[in-house]
Image (tube, rainbow, N blue to C red; front, side, top):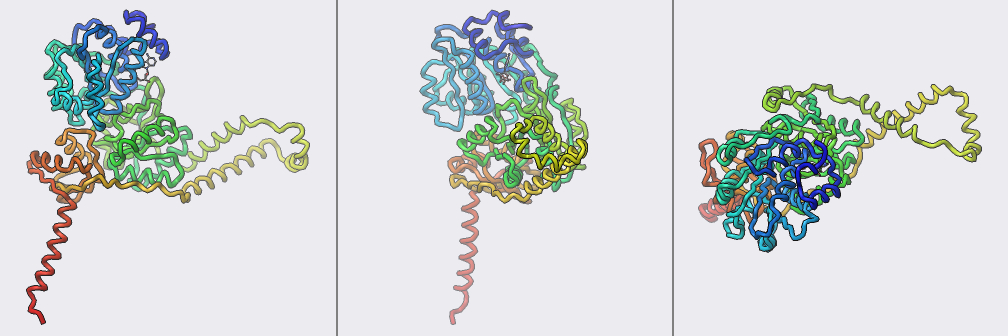
Length: 551
Ligand code: AMP
């Protein structure tokens, strides 16, 4: 495994690799590139993000599709808009020395007309999210009848996001002879179902053991009650002065609470959840990418497709329900050969869930004591000592001016002076920590979006409903991952959720066609219900008055 020359890729691709400074293929590239180039069989590759899988499928596919045909020859299907844009960008970088080679991204959450125009320019490769591609197919804007190579990237993510139906419909439109290359961090049951239905004698390739987190990630956990977790997070951040992290939460409310506290405490944090508009989301991601902010507080749904690959830490404020989600969360650190730390906060009652992750993902966790004030102090002092040793000495002139100071301090030994500096700075460190806590900088008010409608659904806590389940249920029925979902409130027997107003009707009509735990779902407009109830109450009062004999 030395260089890319040995695969027989065309010179223009090699030139781009040279520009990109890709000298040595990664493990997955070395295993996948020759196989795709030979086009002999379908491939199932287990590979985490960050292992170089985009080039693993991108380079050979581009190499194979250099001809003057006007058909779409390759489709790359991926779960999110962000990933779609990232893959398109990478493929454009690879093919930049190849004249007239077109790659078109097709994703939801944006106007379809522009994408329809781009399709008319006869791209060789389209990179798509499943919902939007299906839409294009239904509108007869895309023809997949000549497709030769079909990539399913992050297959487990796409399936856990409820895209199975879309994937089925899309694959049915492709010729039976096409080759399928499936990439997935984990080989879940859902993934196996797809491979069994559509792939013939696939070659299994692994750059990591299936369902196992990357070896470059260390996993540790702290046991703590909910009410201590925020302080622990602060301590973790304080100890690691260069921290670059995502804090994963289960609900939007939690993300808001934590980011609000962090911002009030003067940390460079922002929230990334489904309440943000696409624009706000892009802004936050840009700030995070450029490290203007170094802490992102996010839900799993919102953080899908984040393409930042040098995170130092992942903090799991809560354990996810699904072990696969944990593998994905922690796989966002320890990328591209760097080491990363994934930290889990659990309560005493959550050991069972941690064991389940250990068992299914073959990840080993180390229990650690909660970091305390003395560790923070030690870390701050060590940072101070490292900065102190870099400070230059005063000039002879300045020394002369400070003669009095020299004679005043001359009575102390070197040991005593070092001791005093430590005392002085440990005091400062404590003061700065206290100040951190008392900071009065207010969080920016979280904007409420008046394009959202509030709906009521007839299931709640007693039906074992969780916010994640509700989000999955909504995405599954509406069949669009890009639908904006706002605040969720789960009561005992019902729940309310906000959804972008233009999806309201769709949600009400589609959700009543499905069942949850043997119960027929009923979704109604909460605002109308509320107004109606109040109106009825008022009417009743008036009626009661009318029924009284007038005096
Ligand atoms: P991916 O898993 O495709 O998202 O790639 C992860 C990161 O590794 C991206 O920033 C790529 O640009 C980079 N990368 C991929 N292959 C190579 C390579 N052979 N040499 C150096 N960097 C690479």
